[in-house]
Length: 372
Image (cartoon, rainbow, N blue to C red):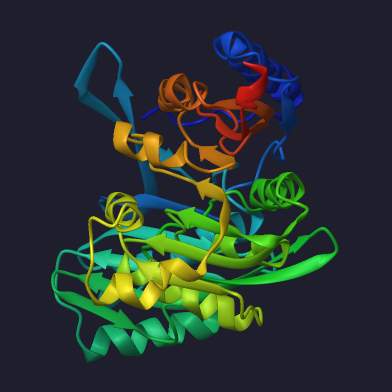
């Protein structure tokens, strides 16, 4: 990977380049003007992972620079700070490194550290080892928790020792509301909290006025959008394949007092089959699909995008809200979706500044066939 070079004075230029690229790449879909949501220019990632590099008596955080001409060639890059990461992570990095370096029980065969933080300053640190963890390790790790005001999880092969808890609670202010999210260690969460707030506000705006109809959400993760959008709809049915994410999404619905949303554990492909009546069973029966009146579908797929069958399924809905982390697969899917729908809103969320990656949001509405 290329380690991002953060230069806040050039932030507007890098964002403008992304704006120009997306505008050109999607011009043939005739979208409205691109809505652009900037990120903080630095200290925007709430989670990061680093290798721990042992060099004599020293110990330091490291990442690897890959030679584009020869991907097998990697250069170890020492990191004493990391401007991409949250200020809480940067404040912890030197103190944690020194404590690990000077405590043999914690240092021995430690090879990776992962940080998960929140806007309010909660911090969960995972220490990953090439050895088993014993009571001596736990005693030292608990002392480190107290010294740094953090939570620690130890991982090794077939071991996971949770000292305090395995999650943080992120609280996001959106449109005058505060939403609470349980974010579990080693599961997917949006890394850029400020951009996440922008995405939630945008999604709430484009789905306003849907109170008498229902929303179906695919790839719901920990309920990030589910929680924020529930009040815009009569009912919400969200699906996700990860057991951890499903459990977390249900916890988040309860934490926010949401009673009109359900989360089912099912892949997008299985759900499409259930809607077509091609899949039965207990999980399908529990969803009570006949009781819903879906007007809108929200989909936030992985980088691979949607397969043809899923695109055809989406085409049945009046409105499609498509959140994408990969403009290439988004464009591929829009080739299918725009046969039946028009692009009404198009947004760029700068989730990953200083990289080529772009997060996009698209609202599509069904074409009026009487005018075609």
